[in-house]
Length: 118
Image (cartoon, rainbow, N blue to C red; front, side, top):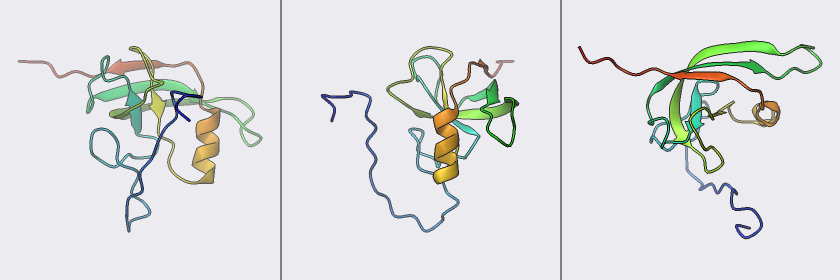
């Protein structure tokens, strides 16, 4: 499969009794739906809070894109995510989350929030 598509994602099975808990990201913590993003860790350090400003894709219930402005956290990485202003928003688990993730390809803006040394 890697010869056909080098960006194939591989998963490993993990036993988890809590269905509300998301998969474990590269930071080593469970991902939270609509609050965790995957980033290029060469551009944005894992663990940083990031302000995300984009739009949710529309469907038959919302005929126009709805604003999506929120604080998210860089908790995962992805081989297809390269550069400073690229991220994948974890939309959750299940069919509805997968369908939403498939339509989340909107341009947006991100601000990494860095601590200030006193």
